[in-house]
Length: 174
Image 1 (cartoon, rainbow, N blue to C red):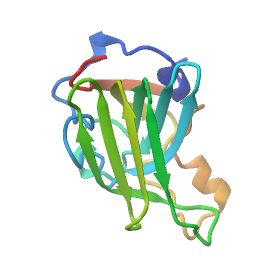
Image 2: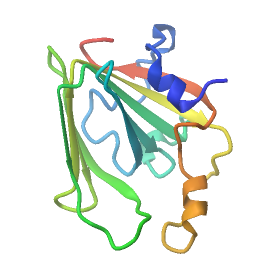
Image 3: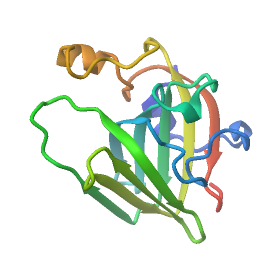
C-alpha cells in the first residue's frame, strides 16, 4: 500500500520521472491556484514535504492527479509568514510561486491569498510527485459552509492511499 507519507519518505524512483509533466521546480507559477494542504519535516534527513490539492489548478487539468507532493532534501532555510484567521479552517490558495534552481540547490517561494502570507524554502534538491489519492472527491470541500470534519475528510492527507502519476525533479537532479 502506497501512502502519501511513504512517498515522502522514499527516494525518487527515477523510472517514473516525466519530463513533460508540469514541473513546479523549474517554472514559476506552476502551483498557481492549488491549495496548500500541509507540511511535514523529517529532521533526521533534513527533508521537507509540502502537500497540495491540485483539483483547483488549471495547470494540472488532464493529468489524472488530484494531489501534489513537493519533497525538498537538504533543507537549509525555511520561512513561513501567515496572518491570524478568525476560523479554524482555512483554504491556503497559492497565488504565485517563484523558483530559482541554479546549482548548488533549489529555492522556491510560494505566495498565498494574503499579501504578506508566504512560504520560502531553500534546499539542495527537490522532487514533485503528482498523485491520485484514493477516496478524494472531484471537488474540494466548502471551507465556509461544511463542518471541520467534512473539510478534513475532503482534503489530501499524509495517511491516504495514493497512486503515483508522475515525478519531476529539480534541474540539479535528485
